[in-house]
Length: 316
Length: 271
Image (tube, rainbow over all chains, first blue to last red):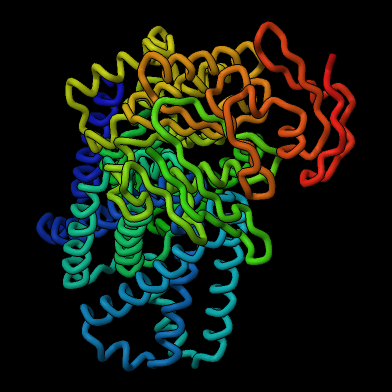
């Protein structure tokens, strides 16, 4: 227990340091301008990191596998698909006329709805066969990407440009109104997870053991999945898809914090998520001088890590 | 008392895995479910433990229907251990046993819960290994850890699906003795699926023989350990010897020509 406590403390310190560093490193022009802009970016990074971290860890527990996260199961491809379909059917002008909160609600609502249908169907149809699930996730991802490509081919060049700006994960241009809505929804989602954390310990034992211990497994999993979908949908709608962020964060958390207790794991995953997004953006800004984006870095590192995990799982 | 009434289950509409089963399991016995692969033993056990919703029929536990009763009320009276216990979380022995208290504590263990966990660890002789991780244990130790969890659930009924799977004969014997002691000393009612008819005869008070989704034989070992009854269950000729008061089925001795269970051919009794 001592080691776990120290790790959690360490994570807290690391979060604080990363946030501080993000605010104060290399301020050249006016401090008030820099702080205003940076605190806004920082808030977005924190919201996304915490939401993706916590939700991916919970998703892993529900899926009973360390390789499955919403991103791997095709959630990000679904986002791209939905965006394309919205631009395709409503047209870019309709999107621009819509207020930002409305657009966000539409995005999140559709994502959450389809995500929930997708996940429920996946878990029902293929129960717990890991490799079938990974395969299905890849196929679903490919399907949605191809559909999105098809739809984008039929867009006019102007519409296509509008689409591109919505699609790429970006922390540089975060709308304040949007940020407030996202922060509120994410906080509600995270707080709603708290009463479920002890049940999740039991969910981790598998369906049969959980039922045997008197957990209403179906209800517990549905509720948790609902919140996970909401959190991922919100974060994705704010900054765009980052396929492997969840995988990276959730697995790092389980390695760093050696416990099975979700009362510790889930907050720790949120912290690790914040460290990854804030730290990653620091590297993007100061090492790569903004020549690349956070999603590229996350996908590069996360993708390699995913390969490594797959290879290890095959050996098991 | 567990009462099973008109229980049928079909994974596919064409073939019934359980076919109209009615059976009573009164408290205070060790009951072994035996039968060939696919006879429906594990499905019956799962249906009793409400891990599976049967196509039709009802399972009552002390008068309450397990399908509709409050899950934690059921979990305080009936514990179940499946044969495939692969857990993705890395748990220590004591972590696992503490889960047995979940139906009472919902994850917040009280002092009395900790006391029961300690007793159960000692009961299965894993006190010294409490902080070991499950993946560091041998198969027999692992099985004992899971049994400790089930005992910590402090239920009248303990259901086990092939608890001897993957255990060698030393650990099989130790596991069966442990379960027999739990029945005799702790008053638990044990219902278990067993592959080995001889283990069932040696440790069971009652043997329920299943074939093709039906209960074909039901009685104490001396009644079931006869060539006609075994032919009903397994569809093959099995010689039975009595050795020091225990019946031993020689299912490996070569009299294995399959026969129709409905019309047993003349049986070759052992000398």
